[in-house]
Amino acid sequence: MTDRHAPRTLSLVMLTLFALAFSLEPLTVSAQTDAPQVSQTAEYNIGFACPVTATLSPDQTNLWVLMDNCFGRGFTLQGFNAADGTPVKGDDKNFADALAPLNDKWIYPDTKPLAFTPDGGIDLRYNDADTYDALNLRLTLTGEEPAANELTSLTNDTIQKLIPEFAGYSENIIYSTDHTLAVIPDTSAFHIIDLKTGKELFQFEGQPTTDYSRASFSSDNQHLYISTLKNGDDVQDNSSTLNIYNLADGKLLKTYDVPSYFNIFSPDERYIVAQVGGQFDAGFIVTSLETGVTSQTILVNEPPHPVTECLNTGKKLKGLDYKTRGELPVRDIIWLPDSSNFFTVNSYIGDMSGSRGNLCIFNYSRLRQYKVE
Image 1 (cartoon, rainbow, N blue to C red):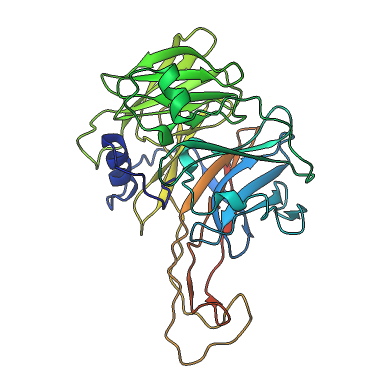
Image 2 (tube, rainbow, N blue to C red):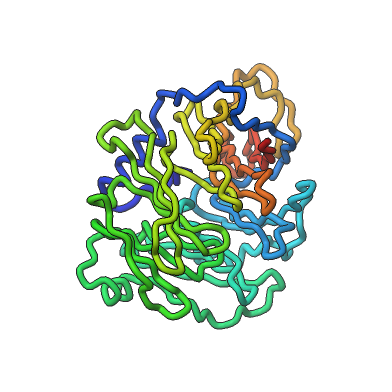
């Protein structure tokens, strides 16, 4: 998932990620009969806000989506039932008041910035727009004052104390799904931090640098995944070496050769889903780690179509040659616990015309569910 916000100065890794995300060359995938079969089973209209990131509730029944007004302000947190996509009641303003500090700050969806912490609170990790220092916001679904955050905030000062010669980018820190662990990519190593104690557990060396590698945690915090591009100098080559490490002792458990780089694991580690393509041919593929076979590309955009009414007001349009963009980029991918289904959160990226008082919205954001067999 590519964030529309740009970091201060693009590091080599971020330049590489940018090129991969917007490459117009589609990835050629296997058409073998034993390839994973991916089918869309549901699509839900989730309104005229733009999704930023998402997470599952602790009981795995609801998907909570952080949204903004498509321009980095007006944040809300909206819940949807994972079974049927129906809205879940939050507060009367969808927590807009509590989320006001996020306005004009940097939020990086690839870092897992939104989570339910073990104490039941909701934790948001983001960065100051000027200093890029790490910031932390907490709230509760009940509207009560959240408990004091006992998890370490990885500010610039904290990182320098943990890693005295740190030369990476603090906004590239990756969090676990419950925000109890973090991995800090430095230029030559990945540092695994226990946020409950504020101490480093161990580190994994880059190969020989972290510039072409991407780390993430398993949903149960037992494993660390590191994908390393095989040919980092070729922005058309997404193939990578995927290592799985045991977080109990840091030992390497498994290694796979896979055709993708932004890899999101199913909870049972049978599949990875990864985005491919560019702005106009965006899609994703699912790879079976057991067989190494990849599904056909599932496209996410829709053909542009004429706009005949403003969806936000119902006003009919005549004589205006407006068309939708048709672009519905995926902002987050969330697997369900049984590993047979996952959700994509698709943004309509503010496809609209006019201004306040005369705003005409052409499309809407989506929550889509897919089944893997």
